[in-house]
Amino acid sequence: MHGTEETGEGWRAFRYSAQDGLSLFARDYGERTAPGLAVVCLPGLTRSARYFHDLALALSSDAEHPRRVLTFEYRGRGRSAHDPNPANYNPITEAGDVLAGLAAAGVAEAAVVGTSRGGILAMIIAVMRPGVLRAVVMNDIGPTIDIAGLMRIKGYVGKMGSPKTFEEAARMLRMAQGASFPALSDADWMDFARMTFRDEAGVPTVDYDPALVATVADVSPETPMPDLWPQFEALKELPVMVVRGEHSDILSAETAARMAAAHPGLVLRQVPGQGHAPLFTDPALNGEIAAFIAAADKKTAG
Image 1: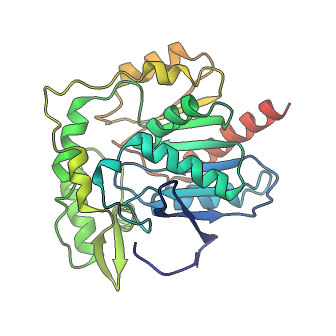
Image 2 (image 1 turned 45 degrees about the vertical axis):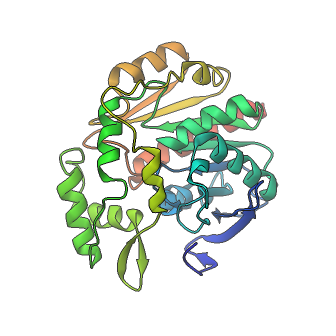
């Protein structure tokens, strides 16, 4: 577990224990008694709470609908403790950890914004604990996962290199992912680097347990992908928004269209010039998510 700061721009540290006693961390934005529906942000495989900072600030400080926002860091990521048993780095355990965090935070129901693995956890939570979720935003993930994207992820997990500065880290990320994110500016790539790496006295440092490599080690082009359509069905009564990167290699346009057909009322938003997974650095996109959650809040409250 790394980092000692207890507060940051708009957030305070929230620590809790998993059911097996592991110490876990989340950032807690906004007032605990904010009137709006709480929002839970769940990151991708190797991401930390930093990934959601701009979105969490926008949602928690919204003038009309201020909300409490919790941005979780799974076991083995960010400031959550590493698990001595890497077999616990799996979606079922992590979904249980999120539910334990919600209970510890006193949050009975919430909207969820899930990026990649976080969207899978949202579907699992909908099955495990119906009634907790009031709305779901799935960022570049769906019930069918493209193997090409998983192979790309396998290629970088645990192999990020050791950049000496954040400028070098930004260049490295741009070389690796620039083709998928042509819309990103120099400033965006620097933001991307700061989301990806922990700042250790100015030195970018990988912010996850290297043992996470084991979660994708056996993936090959022949690996059968899980069918998550039954889990997606658990969202049928909920407002759902799907955000898809134009160049995504995880969520195909065909799968996104099938999701929309299977879920009447689903909001589909494509992000031009970005791949897997779109960043929450665009105020326009964040505003659309805020409006979606506000509409869901009003609908379910009414």
